[in-house]
Structures are given as C-alpha cells and as structure tokens.
Length: 299
Image 1 (tube, rainbow, N blue to C red):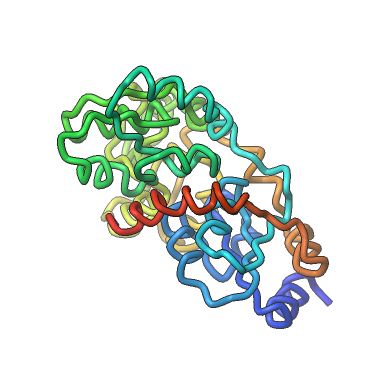
Image 2: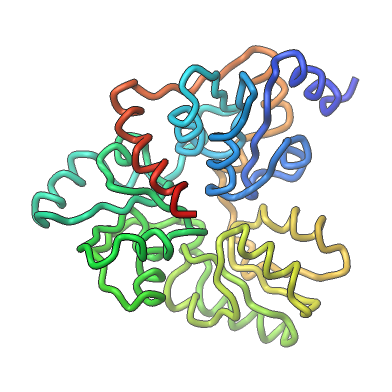
C-alpha cells in the first residue's frame, strides 16, 4: 500500500487534518488537506473541527496552532524543524528593549516563539502586516523580529517604526544582482518577491507579496513568465496551479532546510505514532492567544 493511501486512512481513523506550508516539499503539500501561508494556516487551525492537527512547517507554526486549539492534539512530523528568525529574539532581549521605549506597542511577526508572542500587543503575518500596523493608529511601534518586513511596512505606510535586527536567512540570500541576472535572462518575466527580502531586492520587483499574494498575482496576471523571489518550495504550487505559465527562481540558494525536514514518510509516522506533540505552557498560551486573535480580527 502506498504512503499517500495509508496517510488518508490514518487521517480518517484519527479524525486528523494535515496543514502544510507553501514551502514544504511537493509530495507533502499534495498530501495535505490545506496548503497555505502563515496567515491562512493560522485561520484554518483556528477553525478546524479535527481532533488532531498535523502541522507540516516549522515549530512556531505548530505552536500557534496549539495556542489556538487548547484541548486538541497538535503534531509535527519533525520536531526539529525550527525557524532561525524566531531564534533571533529572546524574552529577555525584548523586555530590555521595551524598557528603553516606554509606552511602545509591540507588533510581532508570527515567525516568533510563543514566549515572544505572549509579550506582544498584536501579531501579524507577511500577508497582513501593513493592515495590522495601520490598525495601531498613531502609536509608537516596535516591530519584531523581521527588520526587512518591518522596513517594507514603513515604506508602504510612511510611518517610522523601531525595527528589531532579525531576518530570514533564506530570503536574505536573494540579492539584487540575482534579480538583475534573472531579468536579463528572462526579459519578459515579471519579478515577484516576498517582503522578507532586503529593501534593495524589493526595490527591483514588479510585485511584492506573501506566498498567498505571490500565488494570487501570478494566477491573475496576464504575464506568462515570472521570476520568483521567495523560498523555492512555492514553485511546486505555482507550477501545479498555472501549467500554462513559466516560473524561474531568482536564485537556487533560496532553500529553507528547516521546511524541507518534513517528508511524506515522517507525516505517515507522525499519524501512526501520534508524535511529536507540540505543547505550549498554559500561562504562555493564554497570554499569546490575545495578540494572535487580535491579528485574526484585523484580516
């Protein structure tokens, strides 16, 4: 019996749902009940009636699902799939910075630990960061932990933010010269990049968007060719949903090894053995739930 069929049978037996991020490997995406970006996955996790949530992505995403679903079982096929950006800020560091900025409001990118979310006023994703910051009115804002997404929000709103010096290593590897070389090789292609990229890279793009935004732009655009400036896993879905269009990576270096830790075999073992369970301490979960739910209300 093939793995895909066994996974389907186990899902039914466990009353489980599989959520996969757009950056996971292709066969994992194909096995999922829903594939999306961080915002879409958070929304699905908040609304699911399943008893078991198998989260194919990285640790902070599974934590968010656990926070939004007390009483449900949240599993990760690979418990070591972490996020370097989320590790670039600690509660001690955030406390020290907010002490330097009395009255500041903390807007936290979901690419962060539950402990950091618990210290925040509101969370955001790359899909709704501009709307979230806009919803804060004239408040002084500390944006953590992604300096590049924060910079992008600043430019969109014309509002100065205090930016934490964190970043996504994968998106930082997409350089301006990569865009220029790809455009020279494919002059008819539209350049579409993620807001986690460096400002110099973003400045060369025809469109900037989260993974869901990139998918939507490429689907609705009349263009037939696209240069994609985000993690290479998105090309699986782009190609699958747009077989008549062509997609080129800005660079082959845009690979997140953590997203690739989840394999179809691990999804099967996860469902079969009901491991690895992701939990968040109740006090942290209770505090973190508030800024996450505020984020979901802004959408």
